[in-house]
Image (cartoon, rainbow, N blue to C red):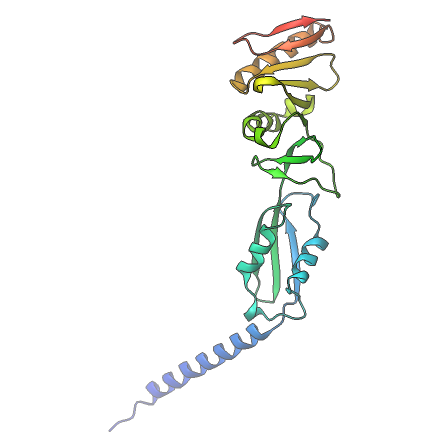
Length: 238
């Protein structure tokens, strides 16, 4: 019987490859984490710092010096970070060289609700706690209760997404029966917005009025600008 040595060599070579691959993988999994890298998707880490993320991980027994790559549960780490009250979304992955990388999107406030228990309204329309690290420059919401958030959010969200409105509107006040009044920066008048309807139409009318009044040097002669009457702006002079 003729022995096929090439066939035997192939089997031995394959066995060696499997052995060394398994050995290398076991050594890799047994390695401890080298370090944790925290990356913020925005340009600033205003509400969550790298130190606070590391502290949170340490408090939950996720330490570089004590945990092996094989025993690290990435889903648990992501869940832990996403439960943080200032984090909107967290993604976690592990590199081959043992670096635990976290990519964090912080929550972004678009309004500050005043009251005994003040809080922010974030860009997703959810209640967000105030921060002792940073105070956001956003419009204040007056007489807006937690139950009114769903009603007020479309108005606050529209203002947040418009540069002109963001630069000019400083406060949003809820009056009786769900009508709203807006206060502006560096003008002598307020805006009576009415109910949170026809938002785009009302603000387009206001921008056209503002541009004309500024051009005619009349911008400081009004005490109230009413936007609730259809395709028109009704002004009250001082």
